[in-house]
Length: 57
Image 1 (cartoon, helix red, strand yellow):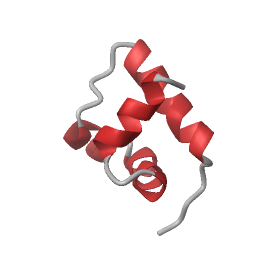
Image 2 (cartoon, one colour):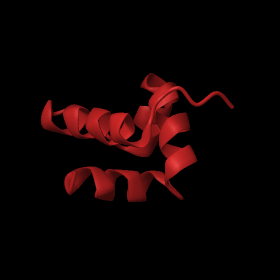
Image 3 (cartoon, one colour):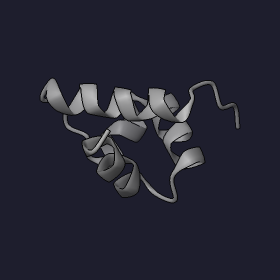
Image 4 (cartoon, helix red, strand yellow):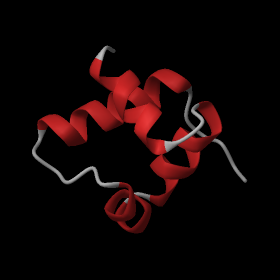
């Protein structure tokens, strides 16, 4: 698994998607943003934790 984003980049991208009104459901993100999902799961135990952490970023 290639990790090419740091933790802050992951949180920033999740926040940007959310603020733009994009659907950040894990199935949608996995399909349309697989690199983001892969990197998020490297830093967080699951997608929900990544989203939760992005809200306080």
